Image (cartoon, rainbow, N blue to C red):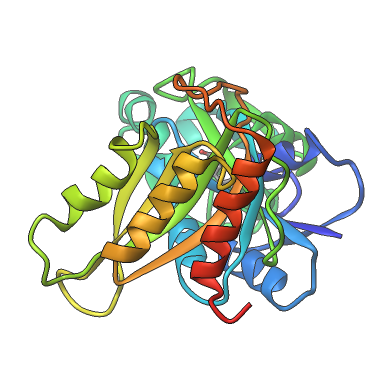
Length: 303
Ligand SMILES: O=C(O)C(=O)C[C@]1(C(=O)O)C=C[C@@H](O)C=C1
């Protein structure tokens, strides 16, 4: 069974329904969903990782970067639109306290400032958990910022629709499973990894970037995250174009192992937008296999 950041009605749930309608298990936090994968409670879990307006979902980046390794096997892109939903009969001018997910609050900041400047916004578990909470007549919250489906599911009515400051926002979700063989190379793939920098090395970030640029591998995301071991200690969460079985990606990974304190491979999987890298690899299956074996012998030298 698959798990997801829930409850039912979250954007994550909608993203899950785009590829699976089998019964799935909701979790109240991203951390609980990923821990359930690590503990074998669910096979894999879908969690949000990146939003086109608000950037990285830090709890997801940090939970994937530390602890027992997980492998991303799929990504999903979902356009996100927000409504202000309340118990039936509530008018806009009655709304004083609003509950939602912090990412949703950030994406509706301008609208809230213009139309409900006096309202207090609280960031809670998820947009659907906010809708569920608001549906309780004794709740201290008057409204939730959530998806239309969450409002409908928990018996709320929209007080205002389409309240996002950017109508074209998209959130990216990843399906993380226990360590497994990456899905086969599709030709339009992405590789996610975390590189732990050597703190005492000058030009360390430049060297990390060079591993990719010198081999013509484009990066679609790079963000620094504190390693939580002390001020100034950072790692880089990176999405690179291509598959671990592409020789240029395998070589970039090998290069990273040589210069970084640690490298965590988090998976190679088909890109949801199907975009192929600008530089196509003209390598044979044998060359792919060799690149893969080379990388495998480096990260599992005993095998
Ligand atoms: O709360 C939800 O519904 C989620 O799925 C989480 C989440 C996020 O973390 O970014 C997903 C999409 C929206 O951008 C707002 C919230």
